[in-house]
Length: 157
Image (spheres, rainbow, N blue to C red):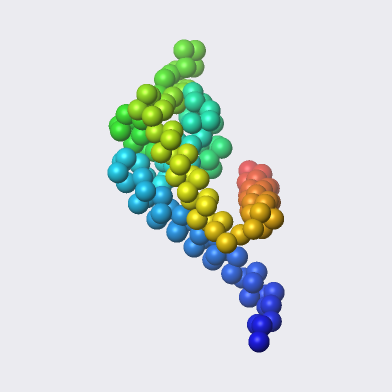
C-alpha cells in the first residue's frame, strides 16, 4: 500500500535533506580533489575563476556568500598551492584581483569533469523533465532564502 503524503513531515525535512545533500557533496568533492591539494570549499571559488578570471576578491566573497576571512583563507590556500595569484589594484591598494596561474588553468579539465560527474550522480534516475524541474526548484529555493536574508540584514542595520 502506498504511504500517504504527510505535508507537515515533508516540509520539516527539507532543511535536513538540503543539509545532508550539502555535506554529502562536500565529502565527495573532498575525496576527488584531495590528490590536487584542493578542498571542497575551494571548488566553487575555483569554478568561478574558470569562468571569470581576474575578479576582485571582495566580489568573489559576495558572489559565493563567503565572509572576508573565509575567502582570504581559501584564496591563500590556492595561492600557496600555486593555482592562483593575487594582484593589487594599481590605484586602490586595498583591492586585490584574483587570477588563475598556468597551473590553475591546467585544472580546467579536471574541475569541469568533476562538476559533470557530480551532476550525473545527483541526477541519476531523473528523467529530463525531473532534472529541469529539480534544478529550477533549487534555484528558486536559493533565491527565496537569499531574499529573506537580505531583508533580515536590512532590518537589522
